Image (tube, rainbow, N blue to C red; front, side):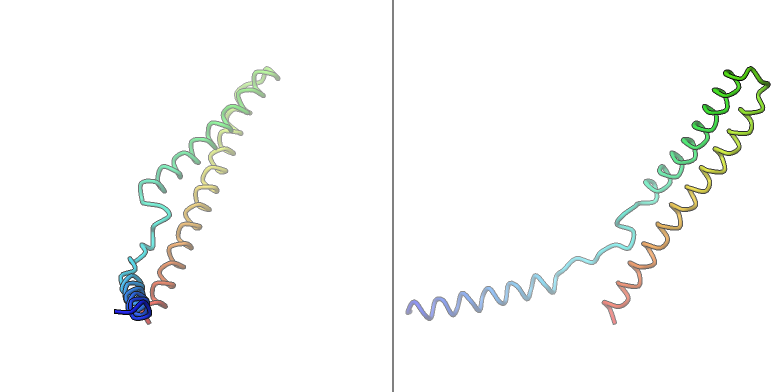
Length: 110
């Protein structure tokens, strides 16, 4: 065998290996960014943090101003609303990512 013959065989072998690797590319999961548990915990944390911040601001204002717990109730409700809004935005982003991934997978198969 000559040196040129060996180089040619090595190039053919490398091409075959590259073709096999490309053919065996693992399928990507549509929900690879977030599993269900991770997304649920993220939403819970967003909700609780909104409630906590609203409660803290309301309690602080009531303590400073010496009022009845009107600010506590008001800011707790505002914190709840803010937490729900952020939670819904997170759910919408996760839904958009999943829809885009499914569309990309469908385009690859077609």
